[in-house]
Image (cartoon, rainbow, N blue to C red; front, side, top):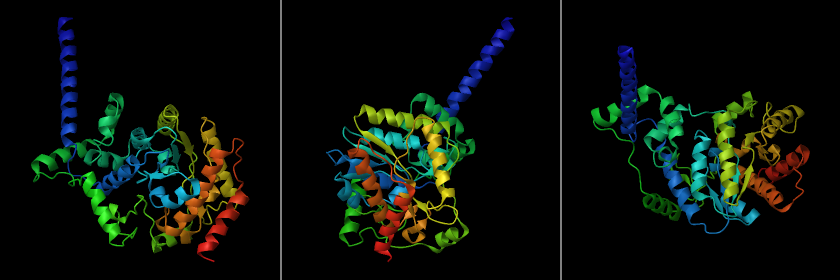
Length: 369
């Protein structure tokens, strides 16, 4: 009996020692070189500078790149009367990452608008792109803020070879660190220099220098040939499933916004109008209604008619989620009008599909008659 007991204790402490050793190795891999999108953090540095300097109630946009490119903050402010903090950057960031950004910036009287990408509804933590970026640059932005249980869940899903490679890169192969970070002050100063030079929102690649003064990318180009080719083949939008991870985090966001005496509006991402997803047709309307019912079954409302954001391919840039300058203006008008209705009308009734399609096509004709 004593021998069995000693064996169990030995096994327990061996496993514990190995676990602690792995956690130490994982911690040492933080900040190591890896394939990641450092520009995402630098863009957040500028966007959070903007958000922190708005002292009155504001609209906060929290989603991925469909709102980085597809929001004209100046126009949205003009339509709604609220200053806008556009905190949207990349659709592959976890929705929990957005929660921690909101935790830093939501104040009393704010309106949090979340036109999140369909991908955010169906992802868990097991997102290699997200893991690589958080290990590279996301410790202060995300990992450090996680409660112990969530930290553990994050650590165990990261591919072990990624951790080993990180250690090798950082300590054994010429000390390859992650891309050196610019300070917040440097990012702001560099962008202000670009804007003074006359390159206001010019496309300079995925870089904070492509931002306008509001933190939007409103690019006067497109659509690219790749988008035209995809449009020709047809593109489906809208999921028919939602992961529990989304419901869990969205509940956290709802509680946070309520506690801060702010308002939360979940709404639709932009979509390319095409033969497989045209919200003037019953078939595509049924897809969105089915998704809306799926959310409603868990007590979540998704606001504004999705046809308000279903635009012709001429209004896109370099991705099926990225509007160009004129597309962003149309989307900001339709979104702003919907926000106004939600805030002012206690008996708010969502626009129907026919009315929404007519409105969008009217706005499209203003830019391409």
